[in-house]
Length: 199
Image 1: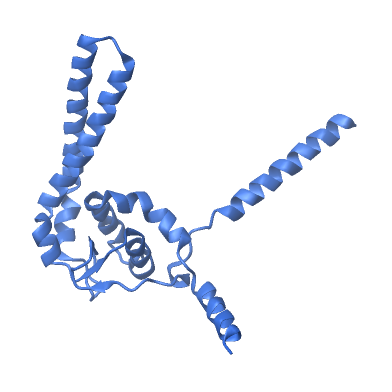
Image 2: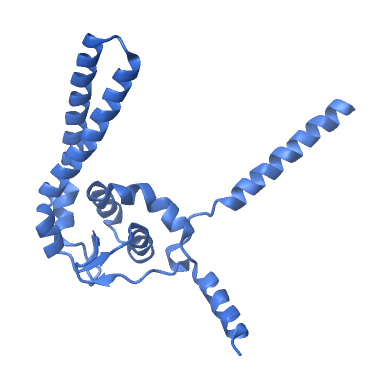
């Protein structure tokens, strides 16, 4: 009997932890449920939006979609550089730590080269800015705006992938920014609280 109670207690504790973990992570909202941040009209922001004010893809995005080749070229270049560095490190010393660092350095070189190639294949920074009329100063705001306003667009995934190559930080922050974004119902509740608190 004790064994059964102990197992039951563990399962209850496990279920409780799973429930708490589920509550801590917000699910991906529907785009219509979100409050979208306002973009900067123009190209004065730090991050150029892949969509124009008219809701169509910016001209640089078509070129950037083809620039996925640039990311692959960069990855290959970085892998080759990492391999050569690791080979030299292994000749000097049979040190596995140096080989690991060489591989990591090669991967970072590959990402940087891939990004550079992708930017060039998109027309370069001047062309990207010139053909953009929507921008943001925050990568999180751009992620939320893209999801809320354009995720139903037929080429959204391609545009997002192309933008991820140009702005790797967007790729890293996209999901968490969208999950943390304010919902419309939360904004209404906050407004009601403020109205009730006003004299």
